[in-house]
Image (cartoon, rainbow, N blue to C red):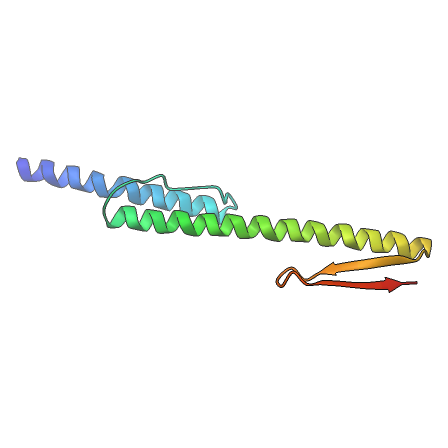
Length: 108
């Protein structure tokens, strides 16, 4: 009677957040980097969910930064190709993405 009801309630309380965590992990593995668990509990499951969401946010920010840098590099490559085809003098400005150091050189 009462033990069965308690067991049922506890199993539902544990299984719902675990299913949400699994669903978010599956979404991220498919490239949906904005997926979050949206679990707000003050227990170990809530701690795990918070850590998972922080990890997902970091992955999303890293992917966004890589994509932006990749686009910058592609634009620079296209400009260099254009100038080399036209055989014009140009100035190349490279920026060290990590250190922020600017390196310039002249091509002719």
